[in-house]
Length: 392
Image 1 (spheres, rainbow, N blue to C red):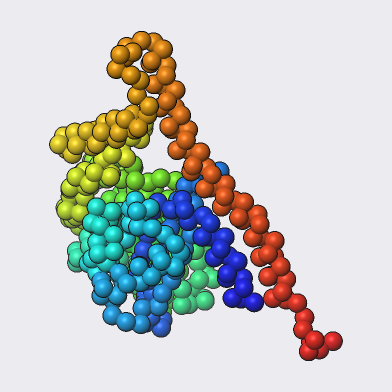
Image 2 (image 1 turned 90 degrees about the horizontal axis):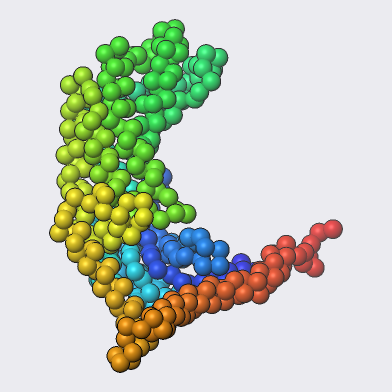
């Protein structure tokens, strides 16, 4: 019955995949069982609902080497299994790993590859926080105190009597968990100190100087956390916000007024990593084009004149190509108001024709869903239908 349910659901999903434009893929490891997995998600615009939609079409346990050839083979298998044509795919977003990058280039083309900018921001913060000894010492000291409270019921109960907030622990794979841990620690620092002073063999509390350092570190990390959260949206388009966000992030970080040498060192490391990772992002035409087309930004945040002019030229060429597909009036009648009206109507008809095709595909998937869902409900009922051997 599980297989039957899978077949019903997969048929429903396949009816929607004609609208697929983008792919995302990632490799992650289950640290408990030291097992790696590779996943792929498709993203598309549902015109009926006018919302972004996404479906995870595969998760594979990587029992073989994580080489680009093996990953590429699995990409090809998934595309064939779900009936997705490579020509449909506009962009493939992955992390910055060399193996998965090579697999994308081999399966698709280098022009379709786009790095995950939230992951890249994670690398910027992670490098700065782990490579600076003084910064790392403060973070480890806070983490040790938080771990002590998490492992001690008595300490947690005492803190709960004094404070309405729980301490947060950081995790290795998300840099902003370090930010949240530090932020919550500073919020509860006075109560934490009053609890620790009564605990024998407990961890050492931060000094007043270290608390000041932590507060200035939070000033440096706050803009990074806001940018990371903004770029992690799944139900709204984020491509056009990358260039404005990064440029504003750099300017905001530069303007932060700090006094402690440790926080100043962190600020310089952040700026160096941002310039290293994102210094040439405007040269990615997809980002420049999407930024220009976004009415909120246009060319306000573009600093590379050459990249900007190339993006504008590409947009103009695309507009001219669309115009050329419209029915052109005869050369003898050009210039008349009637011909202008005919040309406008023709371009409108072309646009409407394109939209109708996309909507037809979307409506087809919706109709398939209506037909399939009753079958799915029957499959669910069958899973719980008692057999003749059921004990009464």
